[in-house]
Amino acid sequence: MRVEGSILEPRFTISLRYSLGDLLWFNLYTIPRLRTSQVMTAICTLVFAGLGWATVRSLSATLLEKLVVASVVVVAMWLVTLLPTTLVCLAVYLPRLVAATRKERRLTVSATGVIEEDSDCRHETAWRGVQRVVRIRSAVLIYFSDRCAYLVPKRAFRSREEAEAFYRYAKAQKDL
Image (cartoon, rainbow, N blue to C red; front, side):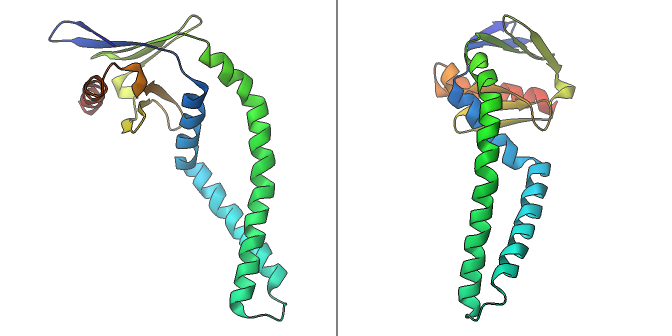
């Protein structure tokens, strides 16, 4: 990371390359937190629970046995639903993710906003377009929509102090 600019207007510039793990982790972190994902999960769980209960309600067993069997049915339905969906998503998006790992990127954070550049494109977001800045164990995320963020893995920094300074600066700019 390089800190450029003047004392009055510092600018953090980071050169980085994403790993496949960074991109998969970002999706695993972000998708479950989306409202649409949460609503769909609740609906599917209710439907699966209803089907599971309908399967066992006429059995001559104790309530506990019926609940255990219904729970197994719900888990089995989730596995049957999620496994093919996950495999299809990986087959469709994995080539795109692998291609993204081959590009060297440059991320610049300044008082005016965030700029990410690679060999093919430049994406710029003013601070008023940033929804939130999040610090998690392995990265700093600067969200510019509910599904999209600038991903800055902490391994891109020379030290934890640099990562913390970057996070504090980005958070302060967002909160202005």
